[in-house]
Amino acid sequence: MTEDFSIQFLIVDDQQTIRKLCMTIGASLGFVCAEADSAEAALAWLESDSADVVITDLMLPNQSGLELLTQLKALFPRTEVAIMTGHGSIESAVQAMKAGAYDYITKPFRVEEMRLLLQRMAEKVRLVAENEFLRERVSNDVELNGIVGSSPKIQDVLRLIARLKDTRTPVLIAGESGTGKELVARAIHFRGSFAKRPFVAVDCGALVPTLIESELFGYERGAFTGAVKSKMGLFEAANGGTLFLDEIGELPLEMQAKLLRVLQDKEIRRVGSNDRIKVDVRIIAASNRDLETAYMAGTFRKDLYFRLNVVTIHVPGLRERKSDVPSLVYWFLDRFAPDQPIQVSPAAMKCLMQYDWPGNVRELENCMERAVALRNGDTLDLADLPPAVRGREVALPPAPSAVAADPVPPPVAAPVVSRYQPRGEEISPTDLEDLERLTIQRVFDQVNGDKNRAREMLGISRATLYRKLKRYNIAIKGVGAAAGT
Image (tube, rainbow, N blue to C red; front, side, top):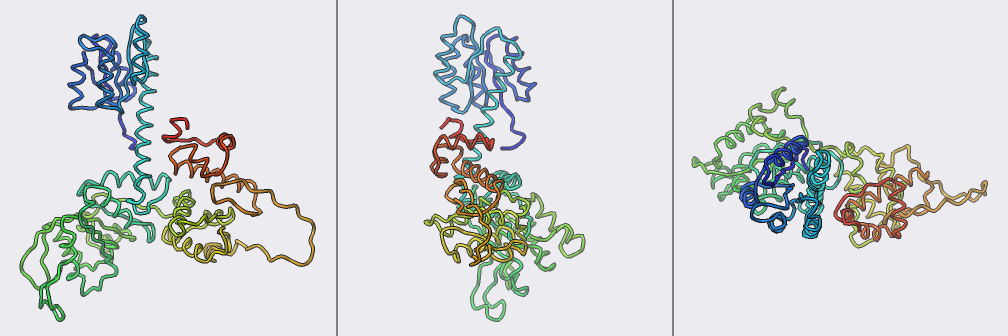
């Protein structure tokens, strides 16, 4: 959801004073307001515009408000409609609600009463739109190529992807190594109208300097020793689609000038040929270097920088969105061991949350793959994590001693936290509570607020679920929550 989401409000009434009053109230709430004096006028207006919220009088000149409601719900099922009625026609208003009206309001109404009705209708519209955004994001995790997380910074990235997926605008993706810059580029391409067109990725830092031009633009037979036949370059291979130039800051200055020429003229010339070939390619570039600093230092062309930097997406490092670590851990577990009920101990999860991840998501991916491969049982513990992740300050449990020590009471059984139930870790109740709250919230995000599915995944009763929701003050959003399941 974008912050500038505006509510489109339409008032339908044959009395001009009522229409003007309702539009004044709507405008005070920040709505974009329109009016119609009949059902026919309202339907005609809706042929070219849209409305999120409609308030219509029950008694209209030709068609009734009830008839208009029926047509609106058939044509625009997401539009919220409320009925205005006189005191003598409450039964008709109730019939309208059964037909799909949001609510009714009696005439004459107080200004504050109308304001509250419009606020409630607008809130429902925004919640439905937000749920739609979340459902699209969850259902397209595969298309997003592993972009997982619900932190504000990663949601900002997803919103930009949604805005750019159908445009031809050049995009510059900035971020540290391992943050998933190519995943963002692929998401922009494969989620939009370019999805069935070519996507060609090239690592500029891995190209041999003497062969960069022939790789990008192709060559003709005999252009150089070993060129026994003509070859298409990467620009031609990506024609009509997207060319992703990863680590573009590593290109030599001479090659940067030739790339700029291609971007300006939209044509290439193969090595060894004088013929120009038209290409229609969308450019997405990425760099882990600060290109603005680079062009000021003279190591990157300023004109190329501004040609590429039309829209910049900053992919945050994992240390900037640590709340996404549990979701990523579970996602990698499902990826590396899809049919195995592997659990994560609270101590291991706490260690993963505290680590700064200088290698970002790529390092976490390698960590989880290693842990899955080397684990001794169905629970990943501190010993299964790489030494660099454990750190010096994290000591492994000492080996059992044959010398009897002072009696130590057995640890309190840990609460159930999804299928990653802790087994016998001696950690503080606060750590367990934080992990349990985090896990419950994560499960609800995963099932879009469906309490029954969440309860089944967590393995607890309905009463226990409600008690924990109240205890941790967890706000549930989603279709299941709205439906009260």
